[in-house]
Image 1: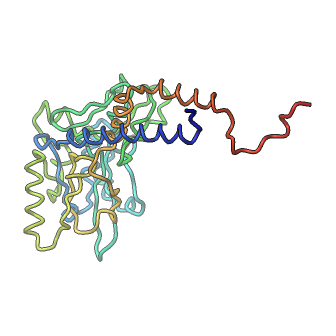
Image 2: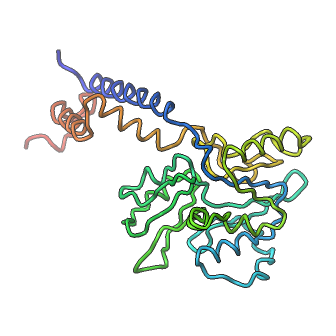
Image 3: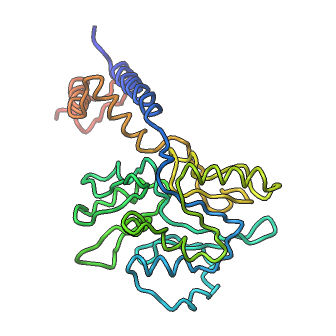
Length: 300
């Protein structure tokens, strides 16, 4: 029995959906938050916006460092900033709910990092201690990591014409793993709005603060479940959406794309075969039967 175009496309769609469903089930089973890795708990209700964390980060990351006094300039709070190639962390001020809330922004160090999944040359690595690092010697400059990051953090050195790199917070990986010290931003924080430790222990602290806070905090630890869990966790007294945090599902984005790939392969339809099938269908079926004929193509 001959297949028309609609029947063929319907069959291909069903096959793809079946593969995705299979991959989703496997992805859900594989998503186990790593509570033994290191993490940082950010108490936005305690942050005073001193920006000393920015200064310490620049110093620890080998970036140009201005005098510490220059970070007392509150004019920067007039605009919302994002980390860039020269500033791996920034602090923003958000007005709302009758108060100012200061929010530190940097790489979230996802437990299942989408940047690493998207990278074609394994330039990104997630270490056992929870840090997600970047190896510029492997990078080919495709910048897929920037497109795939759900938090839009990785930045590119567009001003560097010869050896540009992708830049982001490293979680002070060498400092933590080799020297046994906390990240530089944590050590310098005057009001101790940043707490460093094992992720599981920090989650216990966060939930205890929520329970005993008398309404000081929302009953939500941002990063506990978002995109499968992150190494940076946040407490807040105002909705996270008002602070600029994206509303994200608990499933890592990388598992969505990987499940599609795995589903296709499980159906014995590797991409090249699938494209060949689509190309063959277009060749056999020819122009759409429902489309009007083009008079300009008639024989003279």
